[in-house]
Image 1 (tube, helix red, strand yellow):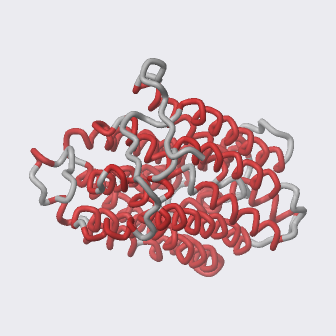
Image 2: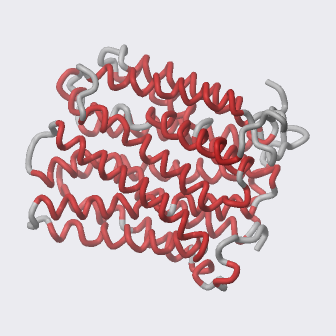
Image 3: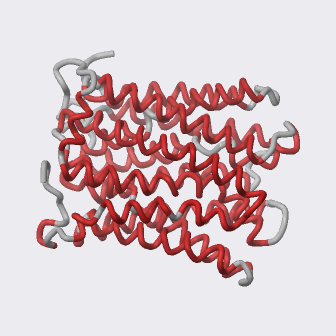
Length: 408
């Protein structure tokens, strides 16, 4: 692997085309993430697994992602080697391990192992995609990352859409389709290459990413992100059962379309947050989104007597706010890092944040049978903690809010 790869200036893609390529690749590549959750009902019927086992499969992806991002962060490889080459290689590996899951024939230990390695591969798709975006459009980081994370959200919901529109005859084909989309993503990024602002470290530096936490702005953004992550993936893991409960039936095609709608609302929240951040700043956008999702956590268990349509509307509201802050945390953290440490710093922040998703997922999937919708209250401490951690950004003068300064 060469130290860095840049598209030659004379032949390089224009910035807009590069940004579009990256966000579409993120959409396709991250379809690997919840491919098993979209077929959870089929796994329960054919493999005899429980909702708790499905939670374990989701946690295995998270654990793999954590290990992958730790390796990337602590080794510094994201800032030493070509980001586009890392992305492409990981997309291929993730596509293969995801496809192999469909062939594991109900052997849960093997299935868990394959999901773990899919999670490791995703560590080279999500944070490396952010590094690529910063390398192409550093002056539009809040808006650009809003698009990128919005595509991650839509990509995570794609398997639900595939189930809902019945594009494939069986659940295995849903998984294979996600793998095929990841291969397309890898090929697109391989061809694109790295941006002209791709910071490259002269050598691998283990543990260099830890120094980012000495920067107050990075530390505040990271703590806010950690609170946000306690809620986010546990909520996403529960989306199918929350929808089934809201409509009062067994999951069918229409319910999977509703589940995708909830993910799509999150994508819209990321896009809108990116636009608004140009005026009001990433910090303020993140705070408003945290407050919106905290309100949903607090209210949802109290309104179960409402009509199904109103419950679905509240879930869509929750889906809109629960992830709208994610790209803004990344934008705040990225602008606090030196260019040659952006990849490592973001990867380390992602790794710690995703570590928090595992106990949250295990907690809510294990508690669902006993307390159902009240599991939302188990997620509420996350956004509340995030709001407390982000106080310094609300106090930031508006004139300086739209573009946070490094080392502020």
